Length: 416
Ligand code: HAM
Image (tube, rainbow, N blue to C red; front, side, top):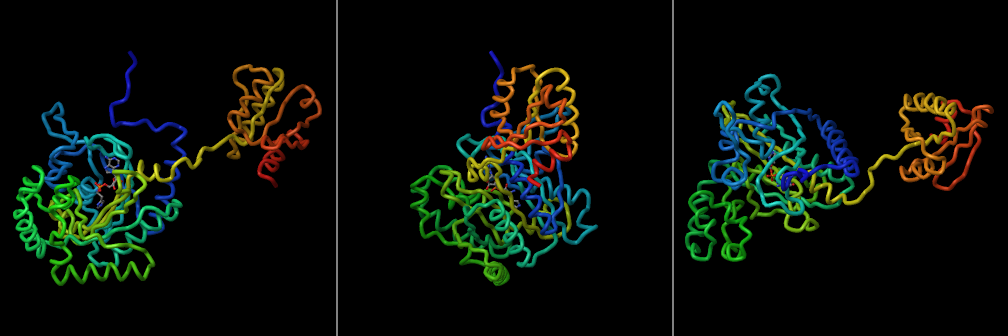
């Protein structure tokens, strides 16, 4: 029996890779125009890094990590997200000492042992960006402006931006207490997980999809109503900057994130087009994380999008490149002339195909059609003797006689 891929782990086939390259290239272009540089960090990190940053009582750490013991007996984990590794690198390499503000982006595979379904996989890919060193609400708005620019450059009207504030260590405890009291009074109506969450991670109860919990938590106190003066001002300024930049958003006071490092501004880009997987991108501020991972007290904010989800939203758009020219060959002498022309045109960046299988002329032209070559040329004895051939535009069959000189063929293909 042949060996198959692991459930939830996908191959990206050539027919789809053009779309992914478009997403990645667009992200690189937009990120660099906002001053971000790429960072590449390992896919495997010490397990403790994720426990300490994402939080021991989150679903990711409790249930979803690919953790294993290596031959030296160390507990290692395939990264479930990108922020922890980037901040580990920032602290370990002391990037904060070289630059007061670091703007970093990354792209690559992440791993979570979730139940696979459309838009949710066990190996998935994120494109993310992190800014460290700035607490000013202007940077929150800059990041959101960049995310919204990225989606518009991708040609997507969906998803829409929802924001919330999760407060800070000054105001969160008071809110937590109010929420715990609220949940305690409704304990009987909550699912088993949420009953456990009351003491471990009460905010997560607001995100539970079990209908009884959704109903029981209606009217739950919101963090926004409990923000301290500083957090309240910060949140208001973020909104005002977003309005200035004409970035549309709505406030979702029930938004809680599945990672514990967040403070103040959090956000999600959501869509109704992907069924249960509504979040296409998400992120927020994590002002305590750098210190928590052994660095100085430096604030941070970032986001990540799910490439598979963006690709689903972009749908069947064709990003496949097709050959510029197919050179069909009749006879051995034409083969070396075809090779010479191909090499010269390829040197100029054209995609040129020819026959490598000794097919009949009909077979070669059928292949040119299948490859969707834009132009074709047939090279036989007559063409070699005259030094001219007919260049055919495959779409409408129109032909022009052209000298067999690479620069003239190149100009004709370019439409000059
Ligand atoms: P997250 O919300 O866990 O945040 O993931 C961000 C995005 O990754 C999601 O909105 C979704 O598009 C995609 N995603 C997550 N899990 C899966 C999955 N199993 N299959 C397919 N796509 C998935 C973070 O990871 C944070 N590190 C974001 C961040 C960066 N916050 C601050 N900086």
